[in-house]
Amino acid sequence: MQVEVLIVGAGFGGLAMAHELDRRGIDDYLIAEKAGAVGGTWRDNTYPGAACDVPSHLYSLSFAPNPFWSRLFPRQAEIRAHVEATSRPWIQRGKLRFGWPLATLEWRPERSLWRATNAAGEVIEARVVVAAMGGLHVPNWPDLPGRETFAGRHCHTARWDHGIEMRGKRIGVIGTGTSAIQVVPELAKSARRLHVFQRTPVWVLPRPDWAIPRWLQRLFAAWPPLRLVVRGAIYLQLEALSLALLKPRTAFWARWLARRQLRTQVTDPELRRVLTPDYPIGCKRIALSNDFYPALMQPNVAVETTAIAAIEPDGVRLRDGRLIELDVLAYATGFRPMDLLAGVDIAGVGGARLAERWRERPTTANGVAVPGFPNLFFLLGPNTALGHNSVLYMIESQARHVADLVDDAREAGAARIEARPEAETRFMQAIDAAFPGTAWAGGCKSWYLDEGGHNIALWVGPSLAYRWRLRRARRRDYTLA
Ligand code: NAP
Image 1 (cartoon, rainbow, N blue to C red):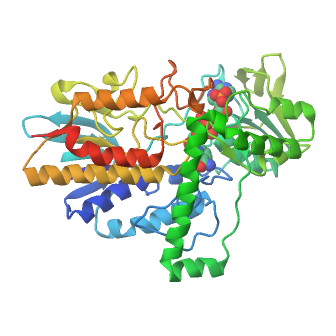
Image 2 (spheres, rainbow, N blue to C red):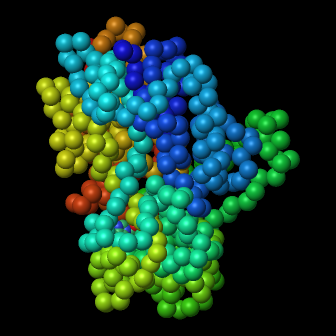
């Protein structure tokens, strides 16, 4: 089978890309999805309490607004249902191929196209490949000694096992990132005993969540400009947050809000002490929650701050020798962002492997393309995640950029679109120059940084600046041949 554009992944990214191709009248494309359903991260992350911390009216694709969001901060099931509804026209048009896990991509220079194969050896040839596989999709199972020996049940927040009975059980949650902050209050409701293993405390801001009344939903439906005004207002408010992350001294109001919440919700001074972060706010992803601290105050919940020595059949052994006996162990230990290619073997010009090229650090031109790998584009690739605003804005900026490039190549009769090496250098220099002095460079450990402390994940600046950069980059940063 041969198509002009192969889109890999049917999450928000894949749908945004398909929409942009449709807008330009490019119809010869296919979306290949490894799973049996759309939704990407919102299909996979089904742990109790999973929700988005970007308000719903902004956390929607611009071409698929939903006036009927039930809450300001949407929950996983509602977002998943929204992605499914959005994808329906493409499914009806036969544009989606489910159960197609991409395994290899090989550049065929003689025909200027990519040869994609899946795990079963099926082949799709494509002029252009857009990897919309998501930024965080490979769960991080920590290298804790004895992990395999645990005799109870276990799961990861990114692959929740709903078959595990949690009620009345002794549960351990490892990690206190944004996933843990959401799952802990839910588990605390019915656990016999809940142990939260914290290595580093996280900054927690109040979550101004509320149900959107029916009359307002109907008003959004009847009068779309209102929805646009709300969406724009949320966007600008979050965009203003980038200042606090870029210039941490200006984040005094956020520190004050977080400390006030900690003071008022945690009455035990010792617990308050261990929950107080010692790094700049925003260095790690800021958590939004009203019920995390109250959950930790419940009599059936304990915060364990002693380091984990090993996992044993009966539970978690701490460095001070104590054994915390458990029936269930939940890993809220995040993702492996360095596994960007998710095991896909990509061979570009001259057989060069992208995994090898990215072994030390994933470098790109504009976060979307790599010299030596023509006609291959990434959505939400390295250095395009955000710490302050909706990543859907970034995804849509990239989908437009890539679709414009494909359109340019069509017009020029070109078979190859390739990022210039100097565009890659320019982009990485811009990222690195902007990084020092930001909250992210504040000395904490986060998935934004690699072992060497390089920023591998974040766009360093306002999202508007990224969109603007992509608009100018089109003519300057690529060769069409
Ligand atoms: P994360 O932010 O990477 O947090 C992982 C947690 O596990 C950290 O507390 C980490 O401790 C701990 N950990 C990892 N390995 C450990 C080990 N060997 N021993 C003890 N503790 C260990 O992962 P996440 O919470 O899944 O969030 C990842 C990203 O997903 C977020 O930054 C966000 O972008 C996205 N997300 C968003 C939402 C939302 O919209 N509300 C919700 C969930 C996730 P250290 O801090 O000490 O490393």
